[in-house]
Amino acid sequence: MSAALEPADLVNGATRLYGIIGDPIAQVRSPEVMTARFRKAGRNAVLVPLHVSPERFDATLRGLKALVNLDGLIITVPYKVRILAHVDRLLPTGAAVGAVNAMRREKDGSWTGDMFDGRGLVRGLREEGHAVAGRKVMQLGAGGAGSAVAFALAEAGVAALTLFDLDAKKAESLAARVSAAYPRMAVRAAAPTLEACDILVNATPVGMAPGDGLPAEFGRLDPALLVVDVIMKPPLTPLLRHAQACGCATMGGRAMLEGQADEVARFFSTGG
Amino acid sequence: MSAALEPADLVNGATRLYGIIGDPIAQVRSPEVMTARFRKAGRNAVLVPLHVSPERFDATLRGLKALVNLDGLIITVPYKVRILAHVDRLLPTGAAVGAVNAMRREKDGSWTGDMFDGRGLVRGLREEGHAVAGRKVMQLGAGGAGSAVAFALAEAGVAALTLFDLDAKKAESLAARVSAAYPRMAVRAAAPTLEACDILVNATPVGMAPGDGLPAEFGRLDPALLVVDVIMKPPLTPLLRHAQACGCATMGGRAMLEGQADEVARFFSTGG
Image 1 (cartoon, rainbow over the protein chains, first blue to last red):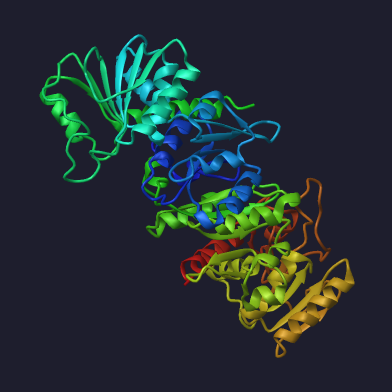
Image 2 (cartoon, rainbow over the protein chains, first blue to last red):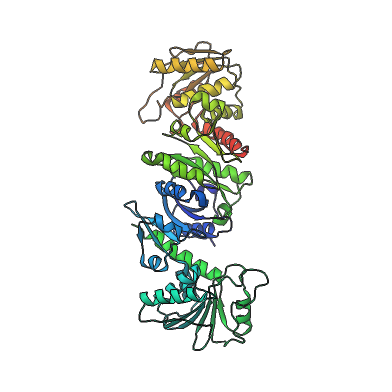
């Protein structure tokens, strides 16, 4: 749908820069996804991959932040926690999750960071017509992605959230943190269950590797259940395939990425 | 002539990065000129503007050089001398001129720098069908651009080179340095003259500002004289306009920039 471009249309001396930092970097999708959004918004801006090595992380970040025409960074694996040392102001979701996946330069030169991994999932659900507020959610996985998703679901007003992780301490710790931030919501760590559950979310990596099975065994699923998987590749995980076979509505990681790109684009455009 | 592009064709996670550093940066043409060359060569690479502030020059450069997927830099005003501190290996022309306008990362991680400002002029002349070897040249201006041009003309085998600068010491110093590097060539500092001259080169800034006149008064020019101006904007300087009115062949700064881009693209592609 977008108009065809020449290189000169995409980058020139006045182009504003954004980057995504990570290690490795070749697999990331943000450069194309975000650059397309900048173009659509009529901005002369591009988001480029920035391969940062762990040994030189701090020196690299100091250099990048000193660039006068670099306005924002997306942060991916393994730097979402380590980046906190380079953020001047941490917004509430980033503070609650304890990690940041986007930061922007403010007019005063300071850097503001926040976490959008989970918000992308919520936005993706909304864009696909699924209500989130008031629903009851079973979430598998309480690691980095799981923490972001849990806080985003809480922020979006789910009525109840049950958290499971193979590492029970992780699930309990996340439940306690979410509960402290959203005291009126019913949050608990418990074994996987679909009793009184509207939405099942997989935030574990189970389903990424060839030969993976389901992240938990539930048998046949109620077709009224909405099943969400944060995994990007493969697009159709064993869990989503099983859910579709049971007649459930599903959403995969790609919709979450699109939702996240929308959220981050808005964050970048509202700096000041 | 180039195929139409989508943003996803121009930048993705695997894109190799190049940059141009300078202050200011919005006016530079290298991002579009070099990115188009990378595309033409079938490379997934982009050259972006990098606005570096003088106060944070060294920290910024340390950070940029630490980026694993950044393969080269073009250096423009005011950093062509200051960058020397960040170059591990200086090629002969860069060493002779005492300045660098391009550097590349080698396979061992070290950085090699060289000066292409003058070579672009020589390549531009050749591409427009003008021989350089054996010709006699009058050059106006012995500053930064003038030094690069003088060494490139010497490297290209001109028979004689006369240098003039309003600052006579500059012209004398440059003549001495070129003579030391190319002892068989006739180099001298002298007042502007077109006696026994095939090519007149303006390497002064006279002609850039509105209202500027000629960099030197020669009266009517011999139509056999080739007149070259390094100034990019305006494309038709008072000197070039006068030369064309006299029936002379001319070459402007744009052709020099194109020639320089070809030389730098070759330099970037031959790292190792």
